[in-house]
Length: 74
Image (tube, rainbow, N blue to C red; front, side):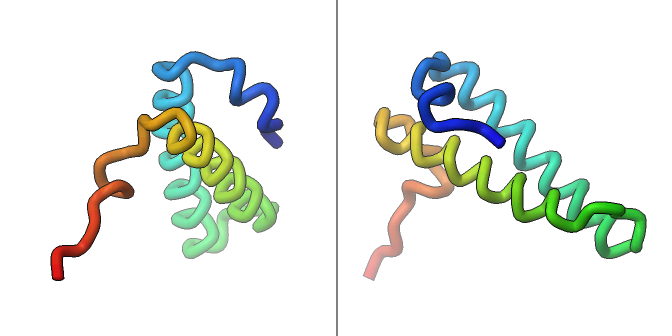
């Protein structure tokens, strides 16, 4: 589990790499769960929450991912 204090001390590039890694881990965990190969299903929830923490820090620094920052035109 990642702590917010530790995330705030990391560099912007390091946070972006961590985000990519967590997204990949989340995908792999979901795939393993679907194919009944995941032993600990709580890993999905832990990874999702860690990813949310990283995205929160990125957003607070003004470096939110473009896919998340786009808004609907209406």
